[in-house]
Length: 143
Image 1: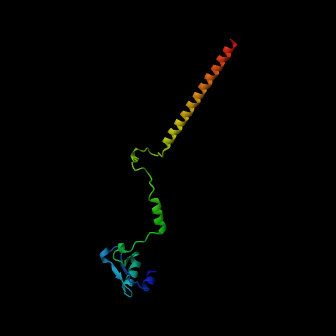
Image 2 (image 1 turned 90 degrees about the horizontal axis):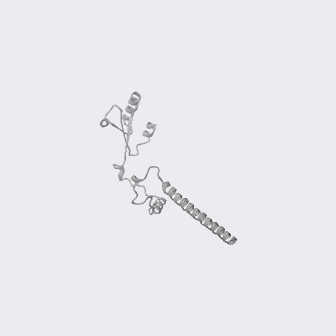
Image 3 (image 1 turned 135 degrees about the vertical axis):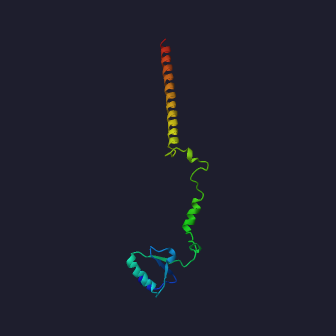
């Protein structure tokens, strides 16, 4: 397959090759119509592996223009910029493992239950006092 692609032309690209047992400084250039390609193929039959390198047209890939952000990405960034995940003074080291605020919720529920129980006890005491007053009034009427 490389042979058919190579015959179509290099489009200004440079191909280099070397064998696994050779140093990087011993790599050889492949050029169109050069017998080096045939030598590479013949040697590849015997070694089983050939390292082929494609040299970049641009000297520094970093110089290539970076992709421009999509409008949707910019809009999402603007929308999310105002949100804050955690409090700034939040200390992660003091948070117990697997804690997501459940303890606070449980404490609030317990406090509510205690308040309800106290209210019920007060109502029961008031009812008992009223019942005693009625009994006393009934006894006083009989005298």
